[in-house]
Image (cartoon, rainbow, N blue to C red; front, top):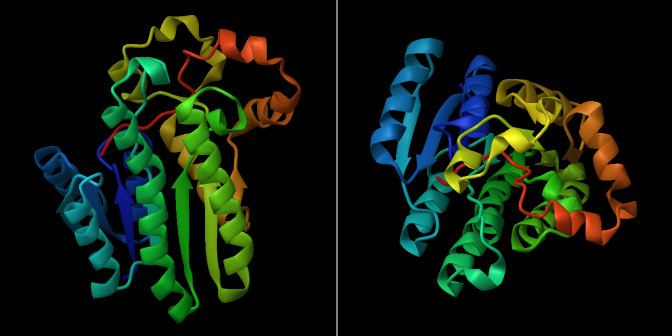
Length: 255
């Protein structure tokens, strides 16, 4: 049976990916820093879907823990990698301690780079495999450090997809908008200010993303309303973007 590795799989988008990949017939390697919750998630996935779940407790911003996860790609074949772990900041860049900003940079950029690199090398040798990097439509807007990190993830993934297509390896950036998860609660955001039609459900998002991956897309943007938003983003005045810059356009939690 094929195996998929997912970071941040306990809730939200990560959990939806775990359920989807299990239904697609993948055994799972689940990576998170919350070991107790991770074990509960693994047990539930095995009970629901009958798949084997390997648990790797790791803080991906810790170099030693990250190295252990990278090593997993060399000890057994991983056909699909989902880089999903992340967290947001409610305060602006200058109001946060620089070490907190650096930790977010490490998780959203450096970890994506390193795990993708570890994953694609054996995929290239086999001539098959896929990497899904969970980005955000925030990356299409000028909205501070989070947007900058996600813009890098999207650009990195799209460029790598072109380079690896001929080698049989697919790479895709998933760019969700607002998703019903714990992400915004953890930021203390008032979700009532967001119109209900802007919210997505994680399982629907992941189903659409998987179809886009199968179609060979390098960037997946959910629903026509978010496709329209990203297309229009280049024309939105920066003053308007600044006005909504405290609104989180994403659905992940930190692993």
